[in-house]
Length: 243
Image 1: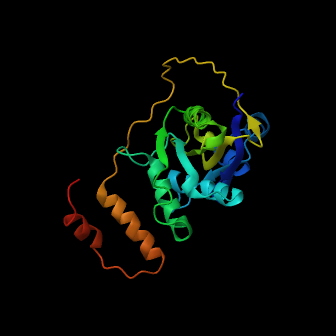
Image 2: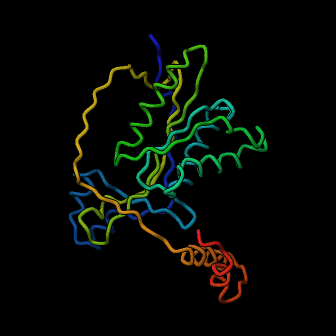
Image 3: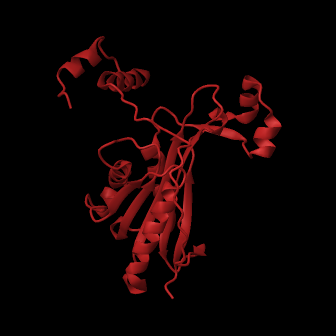
């Protein structure tokens, strides 16, 4: 019997948070229902420099360092998210880029060159699909091959102000180490599948103008003390290609 499963888990949350007591008071909500009924104590909020990719990368870094993993031996890194940053390529590639910068001085610039990355989007179960896929991939390699896979889950859940889902907002990321002879839990090759196209949530793609992105980046630069000339954003946009 092939023994494959979860060997370790690492979690990353933003340091900024909104206490649910304050939220309940602000919205006139029942704190007892939010806290004791739903188990909510705080709402994590990403900082200006945080997003789906950075939270995922921080979790993976913690997992790699804690287990002394060699990035060159990690063959798969699948991300489950519904907060993707890019409509053209996986957000997991952004995570891989940051990890490469982090470990290239020790393991070389190509330390993640042979690591397969993919995003999986399916509301709350994207990471579960990524886990199923990674378990199968590790198992197919056999015990002697010693394949190592990492499943990343990272999201930034946002809802409209004063909406019914506002109190469920939050942000965070995590990473799951999948390998043979796991220390935490072995997962047997027994699955049950049921899929129904229920239209309960809808997240339209949001288009962000290039000018707004550049303006926000320059604003961050000003906050760090950089002396920038007025109208710089408009001049930069003028000289950039259309796509």
